[in-house]
Image 1 (spheres, rainbow, N blue to C red):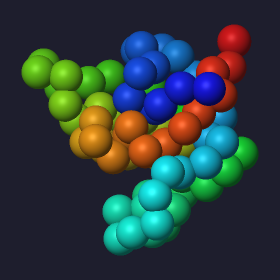
Image 2 (cartoon, helix red, strand yellow; image 1 turned 90 degrees about the vertical axis):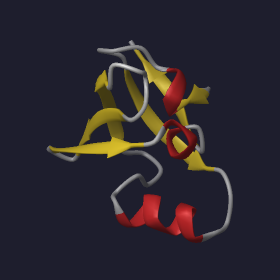
Image 3 (cartoon, rainbow, N blue to C red; image 1 turned 90 degrees about the horizontal axis):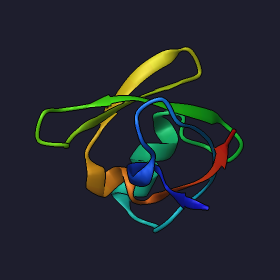
Amino acid sequence: MTGLDRLTIGDRGRVVRIIGADEITARLFEMGLTPGVAVELLGCAPLGDPIEVELRGYRLSLRKTEAARVEVEQLL
């Protein structure tokens, strides 16, 4: 398992869990990052932050600090 922030462009993963129990964690859940959902890293800003991922048929931008809280199992 690795953090969502550690995937490279084009990598896919499945959310295993979100680390933490605060407002940011709740917001990540509300945005659809729930255990079992598949995500794909589409790109990142020129300075590497934020990143853009696709999940559930829509695109989402996340700061790397937020993405680091999302633990994913990398899919081949």
